[in-house]
Picture 1 (cartoon, rainbow, N blue to C red):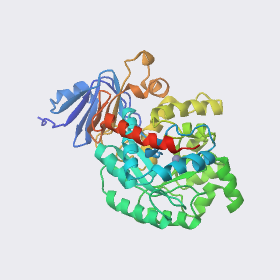
Picture 2: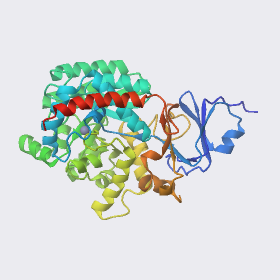
Picture 3: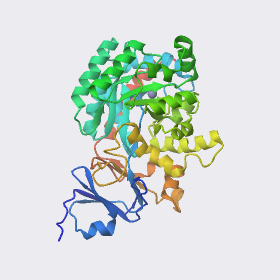
Length: 444
Ligand SMILES: [Zn+2]
């Protein structure tokens, strides 16, 4: 006779979407968790037959799937959401965002902005996020306390940031942060040179060396606008992708955000060097940057995940919305309704994101042995009734507000639509104080 399993938690009653290859939806399914790790997935009656112990999380009427992964963002920019809109990227950054950051971003405001970003993302079913900004050690400590998973890096740029006066100081901060978090169960430290047009060739090469030496991801903005491509062609005689490849910046460690203006030759380079791409459709549309050729990148074998970019250029951190936008957008631009079908879109926002961040051995699907980052989405709503195909509803009908429970590494962070580890009232009150100061200082 087999022994009675000692599970900490069992999620019961909904339809389980494992996102495993060939994994079929499991109606009336269950997921059991022990010590933060998934210990069993299957029909509820099979798991209950084993007379398990542990807390039951009721998920009737829900889809139970891996949490969404946000592969590119700048979290404390929640505090700048809506400060300036409807402007080209360069003017938006230089006349509004960078001045506000210099004046108002410090360790205290970054902490509040990060708490707000975590609240928004968890309530929208995002279990893993990303950041490249300033004070990323503070961001890491804040997210670790909340219990959210993240890949984080202090950003390096050739001019002073609110944190550091010089690139040398930024590299010191990056090293310290990598040491601080290198064995953390939730926080993966990284390096993040801002972009090919804001970081010198020498500093880009130093960042690539640091990522190799410390064996961490390298996160960078790449080929976001036509302006960037023209500037690099004029100054270096090559595309931004070819330029970074020549400098040794592109490898299987690289997460390249945007890749909107990439040529077929650029796509070949990205595929050959196993660079992962973060696709940020809402930000690219809002800033008038264009549409990344995602179907061509996927056809070439490039790994692609969904990112929201910072909440000042989207203006949300809602990965579900960006995924839904992506699947519509590429049908429209290619004239092919068969492009990026529902199942592939959902995979891009979950397992695809985990692959982009190099975390797919730990998260991204629901199977025994993986860490329990799980979202339960309640689709007993008029806008999701009837349901023939759960993937169709996730890609075209579900809303972030339908998220009911969220677990990261087995810990319940959202229960029945309420945050368990963030005092939202206090966070929004503090954010309001900061934004009142920012609003009074933005001369436009
Ligand atoms: Zn960005």
